[in-house]
Image (tube, rainbow, N blue to C red; front, side, top):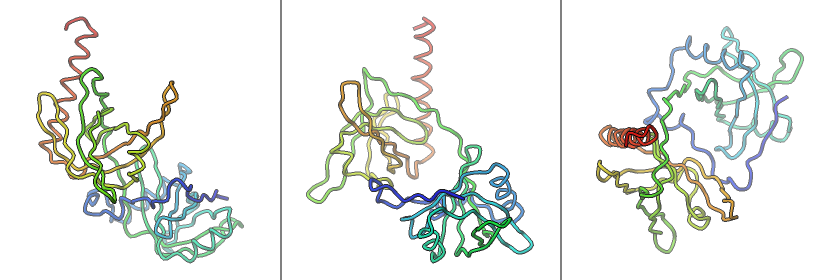
Amino acid sequence: MSKTVQPESAEQVPPRFELERIDDYSQYLLHARVEILAVLRSLIQKNALVTVHFDQGNAFFLTSLLAIEPETNRIIVDVGSDEETNTRALRADKLIFTAVVDKIKIQFSITALARAEHEARPAFVGSIPDTLLRLQRREFFRLATPIAAPIRLFTSIPRPAAPLQLDVPLLDISGGGVGLMLTPEQASLLQIGDVLENCRITLPGEGLLATTLGVRNLFDVTTRSGARHVRVGCEYIDLPNARLSAIQRYITHVERERKARLSGLA
């Protein structure tokens, strides 16, 4: 029987699902039934942990796929351990399933669950999805930015009184996004899913990089001295290829210089 989890109080903001952002992720959407069935079978074969979100992302439970029945168009999944959550899930009119297999994110949704039995045990049953998101993106090399000459980010964070002007050094940069280190007070104005407009980063040798960033994660960090900070991971939103090329050139240049210093050639 699967474990049921309620969101912690620190994370009141419902998650954002790639499946609901088709304009951004349409190239990863599968429509062919044979492909969808193959992905679902891989979840069963690898006994993948699956998170099922419902109630607009405000509730979820952990489960696993038990079986698929193409002839009856049914998907069978394990139930949660908490009966109240099970009952709420049965009342939901949309449930989003998310799993990661071999570093590939899988997402699909179904409109309803019903009670069933599988091998004499309680289970949930729903319809095999018509579409499925299979998100596989290449890993980006993440470059720790120079401490002696830090790259700085200039942007503003909305707040009721007036926007907070932010001028902070980057922790790291990659072709996928940047890492920031903020004070708890600064980070308290951000939530996962927030969008930072008009971000400006000056890359040595490449000039000004103007972009929009989406907040993807926030982690508390305590230094050896006991100081508390918050690491904020941000992803580029709609970054043009020309700007991505500039970032990659900068990363390549810095890495080449570092390797040359290590080898004693610089």
